[in-house]
Amino acid sequence: MHHASDILLLLFIVFVAAQIGGEIAQRLKLPSVVGEIAAGCVIGPSLLGWVTPEQIAIGTPLDVLSEVGVVLLLFSVGLETRLDDLKKVGRTAFMVALIGVLVPFGMAAVWAHVEGLNWDRSMFVAAAFVATSAGITARVLQELGVLQRIESRVILGAAVIDDVLAMLLLGIVVSLQGGESLNPGHLLVVLGEALGFIAVIGWGGARIMRWNSAWLDTPRHAQSPLLIALALCLGLAYVSTLFGLAAIIGAFLAGMIASETRQQHTLETQTRPLLTLLVPFFFVVTGAKIDLHELASPDALWMLLVVTAIAVVSKLVGGGLGALSLGPRSATIVGFGMVPRGEVGIVVASLGLAAGVFDNRIYAVIVAMSLLTAMLTPPVLAGMLRRWPSPQFAAQNRNDSIQ
Image (cartoon, rainbow, N blue to C red; front, top):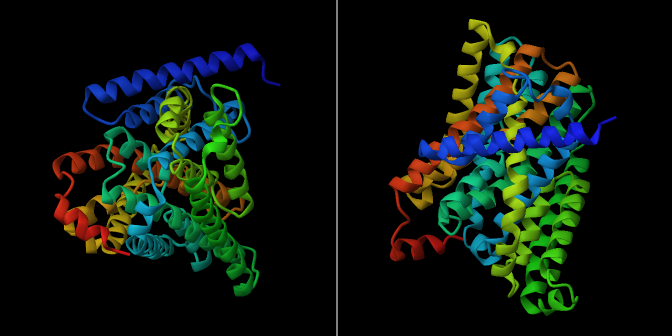
């Protein structure tokens, strides 16, 4: 039983730590998300212990609050993303997602097999290297105000496709662990349902809103557009989980639908206080989930170094190859934008540990890799975006012709 006073104290500690970490990071000319994740490491079980593993376990108030925070973050990103913009980069986004899944999966599976795991278990480990954490990159792009750049649109589009491919791949490797024979028909049905959900909600919903959004103003409450949009966000976040997708995909689609309304700018303004309050909880909790004690030995640190290098290089190569049509600089930006694994890798690692696929050390290494890529990406990506400004209008128009 959680006492209200204890929960309030915990929320106070996490929120203040996030603000201090974010402020320090910005003074160091780093995105605030880096400081928030680092703050989680400091107040978490590995160092100060102000936040315990039991307090960030699945279903706890802090875990729920962090999930709501990342759902609202992706909703706000969707508000700044138009369907027409994503359609212009559709083919490029698909190639980035596809190659960006195959290359990390292959490299990680080979590494795990060299470490002594059989191929079935190696592929389970490799599944933790596949899916990009959209929340990390989206926060950086939003902070820098570059969501309208073509590279940003490719990254966001690829992140949605990436999640579908990762879901399918995880279904395959889980089947292999149970000794079950693969059922291609079932996997195709699951994939079709996920793609159908995205197409119907994203394309159909956007078109409906484009035709008539006046109904958002029908209720007499002064905040009616925001209230209805938030209901849409939470509803689609839940429905997306029914199709095997992450809740953030539904939230992103809800934001993209709302971006087609005449109340778009009003909704952006009204959601900012909510983002300020709730989003930091997600990044602090992400940082608090790492256990540094499992990485105390030289062998574990070497393994972490190798795994992180594989994670970075494989996504940079895979995502970059998929985006080569944009030019080498833009391809590099896209590749790095797909690097962070964040909560996705942590979830897969938790499933593997619970199933006995690998031991505590490999689990800790995968979790640490997920968090290191989440911390490494923001400053590098921010530096690239500042150093390589958006292409001039002629180049932009040429890139926009990619279908």
